[in-house]
Length: 349
Ligand code: NAD
Ligand code: DAU
Image 1 (cartoon, rainbow, N blue to C red):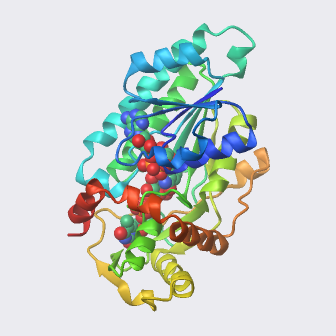
Image 2: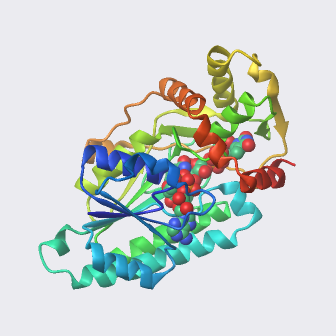
């Protein structure tokens, strides 16, 4: 049994599905079901005795303690977070609460649980903290990619809250000897991603003939990794990662935002010709405040030490992602709720 937090979100739900398909051992999913958490992501596990859902907040220490006692997990894989940079700019408070206080609460209860375990369960226990490359700040176009020794320089409230949580996780290893591992990953894409993030937002807006809002000049660079590769990276870190270490996970796939949006449009022109050319919808809008220019990941450490490499090429992964959104209209209608429309009005007017 492993305990996953935030397993109803984008990466968490992909991870739960991937874990049950590959490892086959039970998962308990603790998720608050914020706007970003969607039980429909895991509908295929209905009736599967290997999947247990617990709705709740990672800040609720009594709840966490009870879940740990009852299910006796051999690992915690911690995804739960507020994850959208633009929302952190509009309202940073929730980010500090969930990402910092929530991670602290989880660490405290995990420490008490792990401390009381008998061998060999104690030595086997792992706390895997899922983090982001945004903690390293922003790169210039010619700078070397982020490595695990790049100094932290978070720029958005989201990145700062994730950096704070990374520091807490590190301190719990250093001070208490907790068996922790942290992964810092680049931009994920793939099925089940909430359409506030660049790729699904562009797919859905293009399908609906709405403007494709590109911030600033569209030249900011992100490194894109298919979510299935992130899941396999986390499994590798959990199975073979060294305690107290951090591992960068990336896709070797740097693209400007404009390149990504054009690639989405080209795929849609072929798969959904009504409305082509979709690129005519591209609209330049006001830049994100403090917008990081470039992220790039040096993933040599996880490749050399744990034998992990991404399997999905961006072009193929993006096509599969567009196909998934086209084939899953019901899921899409389910997430485009009143809350989603309110966010679109707040952010894009
Ligand atoms: P997401 O926003 O899609 O999902 C977050 C999930 O956490 C949701 O199911 C939500 O209900 C849950 N949650 C939020 N607050 C909670 C709380 N207080 N208690 C319990 N559950 C709560 O996020 P995501 O994109 O799947 O990201 C997952 C993790 O991966 C985050 O920690 C994020 O920082 C990290 N990450 C994301 C990316 C990316 O590209 N999306 C890249 C690197 C790292
Ligand atoms: O790098 C990892 C991070 O990637 C994760 O830690 C975050 O949780 C995740 O949200 C993501 O952050 P970004 O800010 O890079 O992702 P987002 O999809 O919001 O934006 C990607 C780029 O596209 C960024 O440069 C901003 C730009 N953008 C985004 C939106 C939503 C636009 O130009 N227009 C938009 O409407």
